[in-house]
Length: 276
Ligand SMILES: Cc1cc2nc3c(=O)[nH]c(=O)nc-3n(C[C@H](O)[C@H](O)[C@H](O)COP(=O)(O)OP(=O)(O)OC[C@H]3O[C@@H](n4cnc5c(N)ncnc54)[C@H](O)[C@@H]3O)c2cc1C
Image (tube, rainbow, N blue to C red; front, side, top):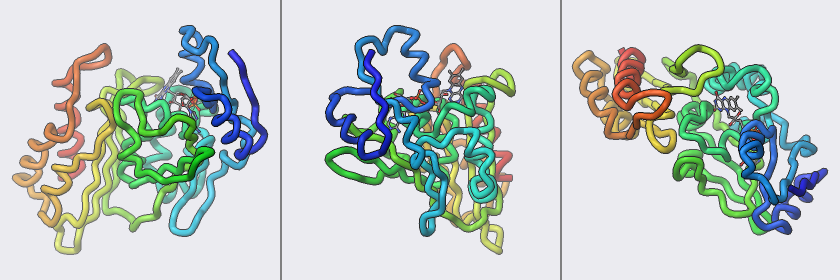
């Protein structure tokens, strides 16, 4: 394995273009697992750890710009993230243990694209945009377009995640983050939910955003449920109908962590209790 250590973003982009098929390395928490399994043998690795500007979290106009190398620890401790994007701060606080949180980055979490990535439901409900850069171009992509399958993203060869933009929004009437695993700490989720709800003065739903992870090959927004509820009063009857639509937006499986049936039941309960 060959490791190169660019000192600047420009150098990182150049090296990524020069070494075709090279693998970016951020915190290494996912990468080390594949290295142990022998999957990194013979690869060129671009170690991004010296790119201090990609670690920064700062305001950029009407968004909070989070550098891709910001760690889960940084995010959960950051004052603006905690105040304006608390679901993301809460998600980061559930990732692995302290060691994983202090090394693992948000960019690595996104690029790894596990169906169980805990930051994804919050990023989906916050309508995050991922800023990508390569030697050819710079572009932005809505987070919902990034994930295309299990551990597969829409990133092109040679593209790096530079940062993630979180647009500021009106304070919601209700907000929820909930990770359900075998135990509270250091567990991969059976289901993981994030929700934002804005109610009108008359009690009708102005907007609902609800996303689930571990419930399909990629984390998903519940688009059918969201559009069904727009403009309606969340009465028990309406909520029951909305909850019955949930499975149109997801496709859970049985695996070593849980069963499709359990995942669906718990997700329905989370949605119901959030709405009532
Ligand atoms: C014990 C353990 C527990 C874990 N628990 C959880 C958990 O509870 N929840 C959860 O969501 N995850 C968990 N993870 C997974 C992992 O910690 C996270 O996904 C973490 O955010 C990965 O970030 P990293 O910086 O370590 O990525 P790395 O390992 O450095 O990289 C991961 C992948 O992303 C690519 N990459 C990294 N940065 C960039 C970039 N800027 N641009 C393009 N590609 C990039 C790499 O090439 C690699 O393919 C756990 C992992 C371990 C080992």
